[in-house]
Image 1 (cartoon, rainbow, N blue to C red):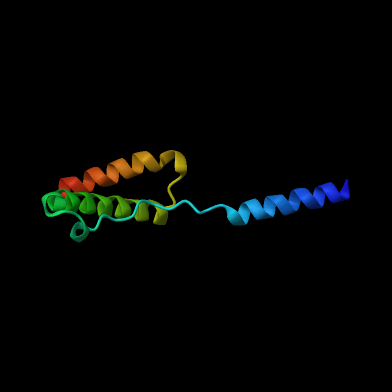
Image 2 (cartoon, rainbow, N blue to C red):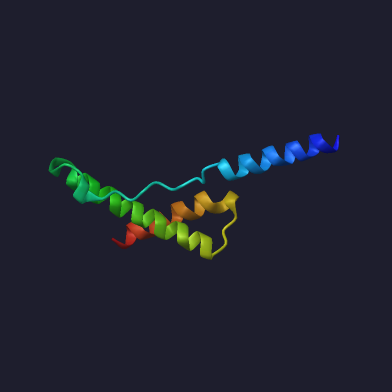
Length: 83
């Protein structure tokens, strides 16, 4: 029984260290896309920056996960209204 427990703990530790961390989507670099898609890439990058800004505000305000989507939607709407 003891050997089995050690084996399970060892396997769990290996699985934990082998798992890759979840990463957010990388920012679009308009300079790395074809010229005909550069305008769309610039718009996408601006949107990604707005989303990151709102996500940072949510983290700083310690918004609960259940309320995060509503908070982000309101934040993005407020940023859009300012423009």
